[in-house]
Length: 136
Image (cartoon, rainbow, N blue to C red; front, top):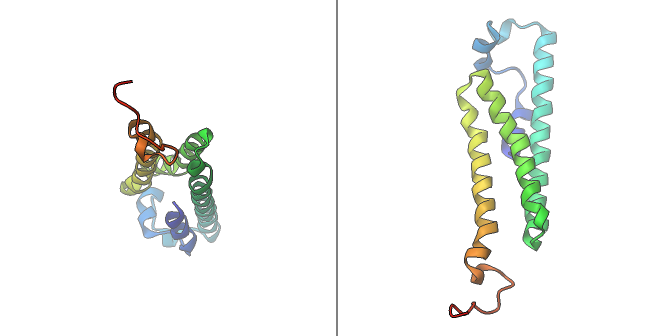
């Protein structure tokens, strides 16, 4: 998420890839329209960077401590940032929507593993001092 946002922030002009969707070459856009598109892309990029940093803080703090809200908060941040980003890229008809969607999938799988492993394998939990007796 952070790297995608930085990539958006580093673009200086509308990419040629947008020409098909705009119906004209990006080089023929008026300076105002080109500037508007870049401002919107840079706003998206900075929001993705901020969302990525927030996700890292949620993972390294509340999720590690076992706070119940952390998984839900991480899911909301990732789905509302990269999930919506992927959806909008797909709505545009661009082929690279799978990049942010893959990240969303990886985060959700990681969350499921982090939240389910202690329940399935109690020894994987830091709090488990002994294994449960199977005869109980």
